[in-house]
Image 1 (cartoon, one colour):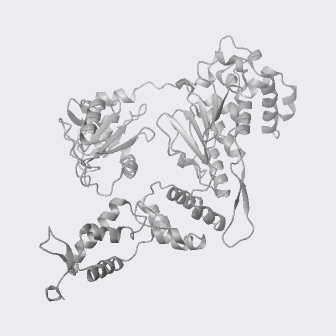
Image 2 (tube, one colour):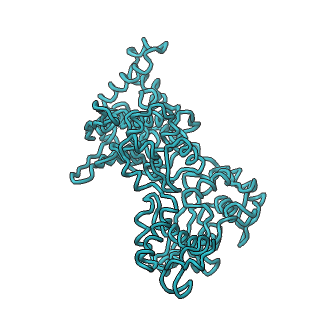
Image 3 (tube, helix red, strand yellow):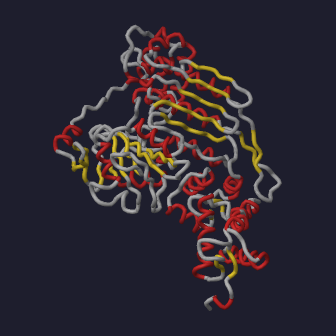
Length: 560
């Protein structure tokens, strides 16, 4: 969009400054993110979140909405500024917080829009150890009455999955699903003191013991996991799993309860071929399946357990040629997915407590947070990219399970370096997916010789490239010494006598590292010319600095 179109877009979506919307210039971000209390970006995030959430637009003139653009970014990007602000704004909800970047196509002015979620119940958002709010047109420390209003907010503790359904009976449950449920329960508790009694329980006793029904009454949980398809009308939601095949061949199928059986039916729809991976300098291949069935079922069961059924949305499984995508309604409920990769994080609460208890009783999930770790280790042990939640949204969890190799260097590295710690593999996985990593993480990987390149375009390091047969990729990504480029320019001018700026760009740009983006290459070229003309004094502009062609500087004028 050009500048006029961007301004129109902003006026349509964010037309008025109020408690939910703030416009600020912030052309220089060096001290604007966390600087003066009550005047920086962190303070505005706190104030807007402590009302009902909203938006902060920077790079625009206050009141007029004239686009001025952010001119000095310091070292901030839309990705890393989010992480830093989450660290500076206590209680800010990470699931709903995102930064949208817009660049005008004609004037190249950059505007950032901070989408700020409301504070969570009874949790004010703090910046600089203070809570802030909007009062009329001013940003002020939170008034006592506003703080009291937040701290006394009602919290909805209802568990939708435990609610009983008037009129539903055991006859509305699927007979085959009941048989499988009893088998799964018996297997789960085969070493329990009551294991010998399980076969003697009648259906009502079993369902209560398995925490599927409550005192014989049918719950939403019972209908989801064991209900007959025609009994779905008892559920005030869209109880459905949709499998969709995309690509050259297209197909889809909807699956209704009982979900205990439906997940296996979905699993059988997914095409699962085998791959052969060849470690460097080895004749014997390592054969792995495209997908681990346990990972597919784990992902499906997580969708069922954590779905926000009150949003009345179906669970969607999309099968692409290279990956599976699982989508369920409702944001990630406790923490961030990455917190659970190591298996050390244990969730303290659940969106559907009764449903999760029942699924634990039937061996479908655990409640210790090991599910994501299980998927992570399976992908790592099969040398594939790790589970990816980066496409998730505030009201939707999106999990991508890759069934192919993204970067052969990464895959062969896992084949040959089984000693790599999981946290290192996680970082290398982000590098191969071109996702941002922190400066500290990059420094650690670089110290171990695992990555090279300039931020944010990191790539596999030379020693890995050499051991994995990717030397050509390494050469394309490697940065030469500045002297190499300077010699090219000097040799060109000696041979042809003079050159325009465009001719020198043509000479140099395609030889710069592929790890640099176009803007970084232009900056590199500009710095080279500046160094050669002002510091080295080896070249100059004929006819003056701002006109003419580049030529070699005459020897008598060169300082020695």
